Amino acid sequence: TGVNVIVDETPDSVTLSCFDPERREVAAVALASLVADGRIHPQRIEIAYAEAVAGAAERTRAAGHDAAERAGVAGLHPDLVETLGRLRLRTSYGQNVLEHLVECAQIAAVMGAELGADVELARRAAFLHDVGKALTAELGGTHAQVGAELAERWGEPADVVNAIAAHHDEVPKATVEAVLVQAADALSAARPGARRGPRARRRQP
Image 1 (cartoon, rainbow, N blue to C red):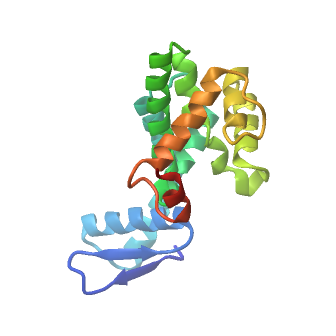
Image 2: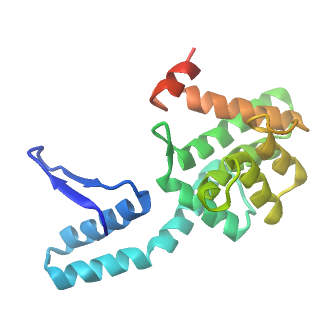
């Protein structure tokens, strides 16, 4: 897997060390399978590794579907769901990006209801606003730009596309729901304990 397995003196603790989150997940799934099975030898390790690799796409899709369900967002293109699922392995200043999107959707929906805005539009746009982070390394450009292009390609409404593109003020906001997306993003990031590092400290009041 290209992952270091570190066993130290901490009771019941094994650390998997690697800069690639996808490799870490494969190693974790394979190791869990080996421990559960109890048979740990070279042939069984190779089988567990192959099974962990083969199941990666299904884990990605399942994570995307689960997040969409928790966010209350339906009718997403399957490719968009799978792309969202990739964010389960990505963090921003220690905050899991997919969990951040679910939280943003919930916050935006609550604010939208309080203000009499389009709740479902706010919820949907907030849930999708960071989807571009899954592909910025492959496609180039900012995550807001990439996310807006992906949303447009996979049939999302123009107001959702604008809210994604505008959440870092790269383009003007076209709706009040786009403002709510930006506010929900800031609130989720600034929640005490959500993030760590200099940026997290600056965002907190």
